[in-house]
Image 1 (cartoon, rainbow, N blue to C red):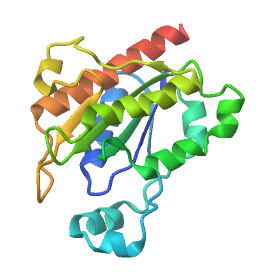
Image 2 (cartoon, helix red, strand yellow; image 1 turned 135 degrees about the horizontal axis):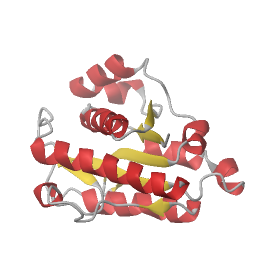
Image 3 (tube, helix red, strand yellow; image 1 turned 120 degrees about the horizontal axis):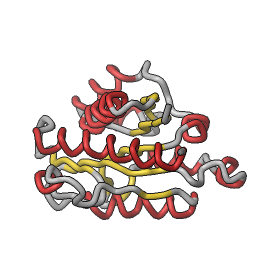
Length: 199
């Protein structure tokens, strides 16, 4: 059975919802799945200053946290992060930066990787965030399996680099059919390609 890890950071819940959908789609595609959250790094006063952030932190603080083993174990890894100034969030980046020992042993190579993200605005750095994430995958010796336009559903969400969502201002806009279909497709594609590598 192909092993899929969905490893993410979410502040207010959008990336969490996307990660859960990917995990469900991965299981439907026949993979054994681990859904893992990276630890929060922000100070308590920053979290408390945003009601949605505080509520999401409280609701998910008992969820399983990502470890290096979750990447080593997997045949495919999906990394999720909100955009932060067009870049990967410090929380996910800090987790990735702890993987030096595994990288040094070649344990992160020859796996399938892809990413997902969200931003408040339509041009909020979604594509640059995913491209920045993939710089790391090249250093791992991993195989970036971005969805491209390999299915008509990708013309719905319009992002060939991964899957992304525009949350809008205020309360996070819920995921629509375009994003849900794109998430399902990406999970199916990475599981399919990882299975081919295993074969």
